[in-house]
Image 1 (cartoon, rainbow, N blue to C red):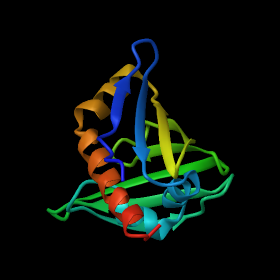
Image 2 (image 1 turned 120 degrees about the vertical axis):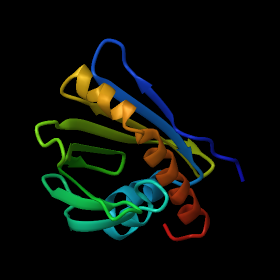
Image 3 (image 1 turned 30 degrees about the vertical axis):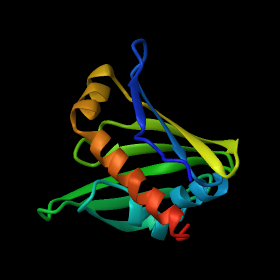
Length: 161
């Protein structure tokens, strides 16, 4: 089995975009399912020690979602958005942290089939401003991204997805 490394997280210099790239030992269908099935999503998203509670989840073109992340200290953080497109190769959605409700990012996730049961996830988040994007980058988001994807790796390895 190929060892998977941490996600590559890059900020674009010309537009307020964050790009994340991550390989998985799984098919595109498995990685897509992990992003659209609310029970699976709640098990892997976020940093170690956090718990995710799904408020509602309608993963279809035109659907919406909301979840609450609870950290080890019991603090709750709400997130919400709308699914603009859900297809077998791509998800386009909005993403809002309720602590900053005026900030909405447009996220596009594509699932590239690398063959041999491997997938490269390309995620792009277009933020409202460079200030908002840079605040996300300073927030420690890479910990949640990498911890979450490590949990997803384990779920894929044990057949949960």
